[in-house]
Image 1: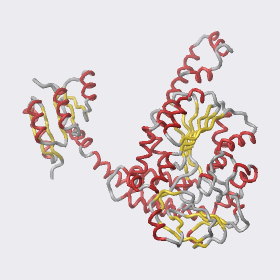
Image 2 (image 1 turned 135 degrees about the vertical axis):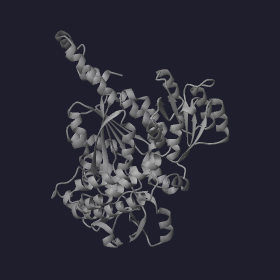
Image 3 (image 1 turned 120 degrees about the vertical axis):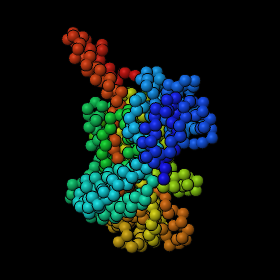
Length: 554
């Protein structure tokens, strides 16, 4: 079986017989041409897996031939082979999207490496990735079985997401194996949460960083260091999506990453309000009754976030100047960008972005959107496209040039719900698919995490007999009435509110733009070289301090 069909174009092709025999022994079918004109005509008739093209030929040069071949076979990789190392020639070749560049005399193994990079690249990645996960599979299984603390579960989840992202680029059956292992991990994680969550709430055990402590332990320490902070909260943003974003931003930012634990329910009304208030839900209801909206009320559940932030600052007697913005459409981000310079005068800015949450709801309601995001990989891909081409990309570009810390986080994640479980409740029971609260709920207790005394979890209780139940893993609640229709509509949709690693273990990325870091280093070097009297002038009121100079830098 042939490893690929090659076209080698060189005016001294007769001198390359040894190389051609070597490639043919490796399983490649090699077609040769001695000039660019004949090569172009052949490309009109036949297709090739890769073309080796000499740069210096009589008549049509390699560069000219390359341009015409690309017009005919735009997707075929072309490897330029030349004696010249002139920068201009290299730039021209690279500008015309050559796949690789080899300098004569060419070693046969160099050619083989170029072929593997450009023809067999995907197959090699698939093979290596599949083999890597197969070797790691048993280690992950043992790690899951050995999890005893919340930090262990975070390590497991990081490892699973790493392999999920790597396997998503490969075409093999190991993706299904990984999904099965994630189901097993979530089963163990749910058991762990059922055993420890209430103890965390009551202060009986050491607990992870949770929603109500993010400002206190992440934002405030930066403000205390006189850092300016831009907090970007992306609703319904999972760790795997964060890893995609981090890869996009790695060239522009230095990034520090950690995971924290969302409170239950993993829903905006509870988790985000807790994030912005620094309080648990029952404390919000008690201290700010005007800002809390009960489940049965029709009003929006997150309409008072700016007031909650202001209340948090007041309780800690902080007088920071801040702004709050919520982005739900492209027009909103454009307006924000037009006033970006004004935001730089604040001590910190908070921006809530609803795109991913809107995408998950649209995927539920629209057959077309569900088709576009028909699996986890496609769902991440849409997220990546939004991050790359929307106004958010411009915002990150502008922030990378400022002297501020950029914090990217979320209030909760989501999970792809696949398994229905039956529940019965009265007409006042809330409609969320991943958690329920109400009176006289009827369910299979082993299938859920139940909190019969809401005050133990610092949750509001509209009635004395109110209890909360949370779906575990990839399950979702369905009522017996019209059960089949309900299940078919909501199965395979992204939901949140319950107990899973995807919903509860969520990212915090603290970033600083690299351009600003370079500028800081330049300032520092200039200060070291400066005469003492100039340093003195620099520190005077006329010139301001070093941080002021940095902040003023465009």
